[in-house]
Image 1 (cartoon, rainbow, N blue to C red):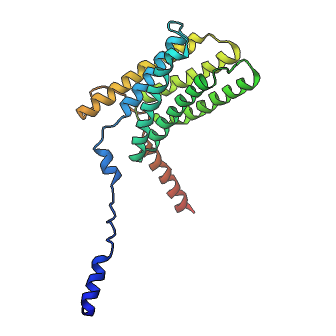
Image 2 (image 1 turned 180 degrees about the horizontal axis):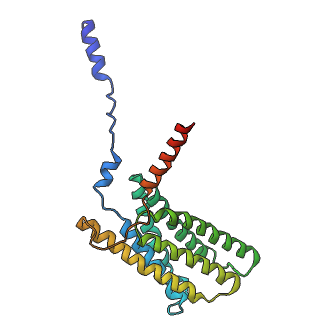
Length: 235
């Protein structure tokens, strides 16, 4: 056996390394339906059930409402947020995942901590802190949403009203039906937003009016850049 034969034999025995497969995530995501209408639909159902409870027209038993209030909104919004994260949509991913975590935490409060007494001082401080935190979160999500369309900031505005009313309800004993009215409006607007996402997405046009945004973020950024460049020129 010659040296060349030995070399060829050793080459054949070498384990071939698998080729590295590059996956274009964005191209894959474009071939998947946008679950945003499902996420907003989940919000509509969750807000609807909570509204019926606050309006005293439905049962307050957690065992009855937990599936509709928790699993549908939380999972639907989590899926929508993950989808938007693959699309590099910071706003959609942050909003959907943030509110899906709210539903999951609500489940933990209702089910895992059944003996919580919100009239006690420490539990009250915890509840108000969480309420204020999501109020702040909703404020800056609301501000950005005003540049997208009209329906979305309207939903977030009434979520802010519901959070504020809920805090007053816990602190001062305000009538829960006020919160129920705000949540009912959130539910109705969310149904409309979900309908718009489905119909407009399928038709490729604005068949269901969502209303124009109050301003354009692109124009705002252009103005800021223009002012910055003018300052540099003046220096």
